[in-house]
Image (cartoon, rainbow, N blue to C red; front, top):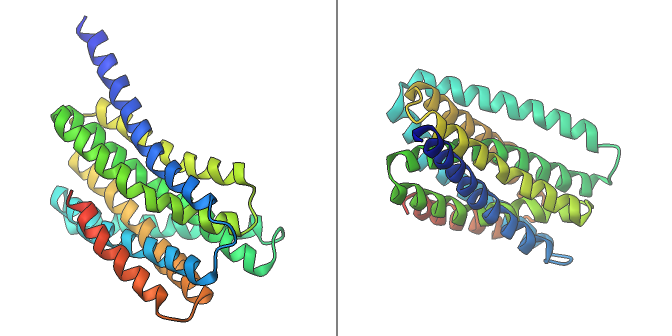
Length: 251
């Protein structure tokens, strides 16, 4: 009986992680897909907003949590692996899409794909946090799931807008956006199963996500935002995203 109860609890936690992980990004993706012929100024704002949001998550959520769970060496190792993984993904995506689009469209498309891959990686430790949270208490698990869902909405927009404007078909855009949220459910599953997982492993997973996001911000979002629009809108978007990100990580 206890085994059946445990299985049901794991299933419930996994489904909740999957729902909250995919709902926020998909809602953001749908919003992003409804923007028809957006200006470069607005697109620059969206990309820089996402970069500010991600930097806040890196600085005030992922890295502090990783350092609290293990030592600085483990955090640096995780960050390094995250950066290397995203460089490899960047090269693979660039090779695949370079022959299919015009230069401008290709840059936007590649940025959207790289963001979706990075966020899929980043969503795994978020799911791990949800699963572990539910192991501690239902209230903590629900609180974490709602907070993650809310900050996934602008992330969904930041994926959908460049992919859509880069020439990708609508159904493919929504598929990538939805797919990036599935890893939250996978993380929740493992978090529920391994409630007492090694803190060192969790620390490396969190810092890996931080490294992946750091590469996305520095190597994709900010450069592409500055290419699209040379005015202050990119800086404004970055600062607004960073400030909102601080609140999102402290909910």
